[in-house]
Amino acid sequence: MNSFEHLTTPRLALRPFDPETARAVVEGDLSMLEPAEGWPHEDTVDGLSGAVKYGWPAGWMITLGGKIIGDCGTHGPADPQGVIEIGYGLAANYRGHGFGTEVVGAVTNWLLGLPEISAVVASTLADNFPSRRVLEKNGFSFTGFDDEGQALYRRDAATAR
Image (tube, rainbow, N blue to C red):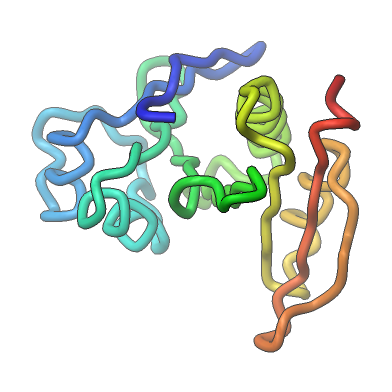
């Protein structure tokens, strides 16, 4: 997978970051973008930095009415078994309105539609119950906790077909 497609949900448009835009956000230059209040959020730069450094697709800008309210992407390419990890985040004012559920659904379904992807995984803080609920609403199964106390979730391609 060398690039991401433009995705839509009932209320949102997910626009793929191009490498130049991702680099600009990492460097703090938002001049060419229309961010909503609170975006980029605390994890945006961290999430984009790996993509910029290693040259993999940077993910999507989550837009509502043309304004960027969040971002979603992968933690790199899939592993040799076809498992890929996603991460997502919204500006604080846009949490709790179902946008995360729409985004995770659209991204997960798109990824699981790719022949090389066998499963999508995600992790979240154990006490981040809204994020855990987003994953559960999208068919992810809780698989346990990692050594750092993160709640781990997985959705296999077989459940998407």
